Length: 270
Image 1 (cartoon, rainbow, N blue to C red):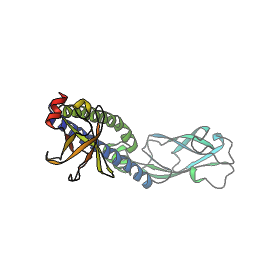
Image 2: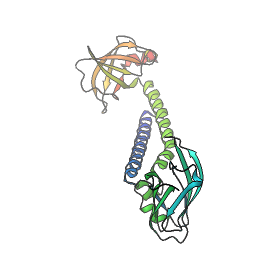
Image 3: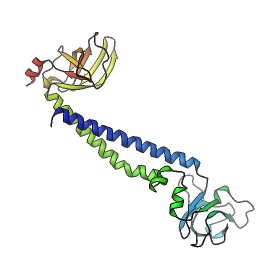
Image 4: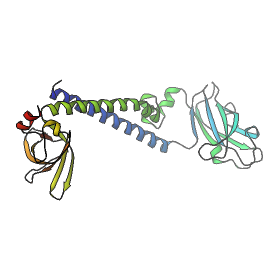
């Protein structure tokens, strides 16, 4: 593989990684914004479907068997299943199965759960059951754009894309390693760190003693157009990495610019 092909490959993989991350951030934002739009304790369902509901056990009830359920229309029912301890906030919770008959007229209905001796219903036990004509109508009414377009909840879609992100990141890493190896064979390396020092700017790059460099050697710096924009003197040389001091006349040095060896140094490395 040529140096140009490797550079193009890494650029394409990098663009894919960026696009995928942006998509995930947009999807998560859609999930968060849609959650704020959604009415508290709103249950969206279609005729003939069922859903699981839970709520806080009223103070005057010992368990789910003592709870009273009221709903309009009468066909929408809540079958109590069990009493359990809440995971996040603790407290005693009830769990039930919401059942909507096939002949239920689409609309929004009120459903409440209370203890036998309660005069007031806890806000956590008051539900709005919105019955949609069909799944298509329920999808279109969702506050989430991902649900409107793809029929998938945003957080589920973001989770499904996570393996793709890991794969693209791995491809980006290996393509970068390949590019570095091909560049090193030609006596070139990208600047991966740039920091200010009392003497000027210090740059770090992936060439070292293995490639023929020593403390005090000079390297050239090229920009994106492959034009020389300055030089630097090696002040710390490792086996495969060096730190160099940029000369004062060098200007507009950035991370990603290319460091090249003098031809003599390249010959010595070979």
